[in-house]
Amino acid sequence: MHIPDGFLSHSINAATFVISVGACAYGVKRVNRNFGEREVPLMGVTAAFIFAAQMINFPVAGGTSGHFLGALFSSVLLGPWASLLIMTIVLVVQCLGFADGGLTAIGSNIFNMGVIGALGGYGVFIFLHTLFQKSRKGFFIALAISSWFSIVMGASAAAIELAISGTSPLKVALPAMAGIHAIIGIGEAIITTTAVSLILKTRPDLVISYGKKGAPDEKAT
Amino acid sequence: MKRRLDGFVLIGLGITLLLVLFLSPFASTSPDGLEKMAETKGFAAQGESWKFWKYAPLTDYAIPGIKNEKVSTALSGLIGTLAIFLIALGVGKLIQKIPTKKVMLFICFSSLIFFSSIPAHAARPLTTDDAGTVEKGEFQFEVGFDAARQDNHDREISPSLTVSYGLLKKMDVGIGSAYLFARPKEGENQNGLGDTELKLKYRLLDEKDWMPAFALTGKLKIPTASESKGLGSGKTDFGINTIVMKNLSKRWVFYLNLGYTFVGEHGVNNEFNYSAAAQFVLTDKWVLVGEIVGVNNLNGRKGDDPISGLLGTYYLITDKMIWDAGFEIGMNKAAPDFRLTTGLTWLFKP
Image (cartoon, rainbow over all chains, first blue to last red; front, side):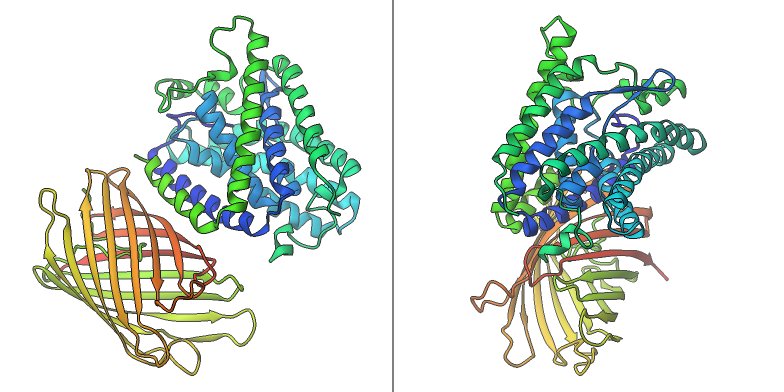
């Protein structure tokens, strides 16, 4: 769902850019407050893993492919604000280094995958985790559903931006984007839960959102 | 709990490199969800017609010069993965080690530079004042809505109204106040009128050739806020502010403010205020703004001098009506953790 140059209007790009930079700036502040020595290398590996995994497109229905996003994966590992920054780093490198996603649309891409995907997805996760009680099973159900939502919400945001830009009417773009990403989201849910459960088995101390009360960010404040 | 990470980092990176080397060459080459839709709904060409950034070294995950597609993909993925690892590590270290203030300054300025003549009378959502005055005989109404949260989670919501009038060709006068809804984390909620500010602005110099525009304001704070409720100091303050404004190109405008306030309250130092702002005209309707703003009371203690950064935008609904929004982030404890502001400016000539 990396939007290239030319799809979105400058107004949309400007608006999402301002929101994204604002969110990232606030994210820097939160991460600065909460990060210790151990989180920094973890951030490096997580970002590298997300970049690598995003290269591995898997086929979905009708000659379309999808790939892992990793917004929820990094959110449960390092907290939503660090996740937003990781998504931003990955998107900027993909854009500048690999021409994946347009530079004028970078604000929109960070908004869709970082602000909506990571922050919004994590909001859904926290809501569901509280709802399903804080058991191991509840954690994984919340994780699977919220990672599906992170994809579908991000894709829907992209569709709305395309519609406002006049590229494709909403009644065409929204069902098309949300529909195909509802399938890609299943892949996201499978990869996220598998990866997190593997880490939980080997190093449970690294999953910041597991077994903690409330949002992980609150512990240091 | 605090186990060493080296092992995990090495294993994690190892798995990631194996993934990218051996799986990415065999990834599906079908278009992704968005590309597919662009193809079937017929707007794919819009994305191929132009590219803003043409210098990506590894365009489409391939190394130029390597014929074998699978090797090319795997190697470009390897380079990208290692690069991301180092960049994220560097960014993480930077954020963790360097004071937030410096990182934020960097973000604010680099993001403004990234987006490399409209009349400059929209001061909102900036705190920085501009060097323009309201046209003679014209009224300007500014309605604002602010929500701020302090580091200790005290919240304050404040709708505000400022009315300005163009008194002379080069002078305007304004009066403004806010209604405060203070919601401290601990203690009682307080509602009430805030302080009222009376402001006179005079345009000393207009911009000419290389000369920047220059203006002076005098401000009088009338203590209309309740002292007993803790909404104000209950004393009158007087301040002067100097404003420098320079259009650098059709798109860029820079502002500097430097001012001094005589604080009426006993035992409180007089204050210097300073701010720097930049404005970037994106389209004929949209303008982006950013600023760094701070106050220093010269008592030598750094902790009580707020510094914050604001990023915002304004949109010209018509020539006489402007909508704005901004997001301010405090860079130290004395400034709010964050503040959201939005407002409407309306110019009206009776």
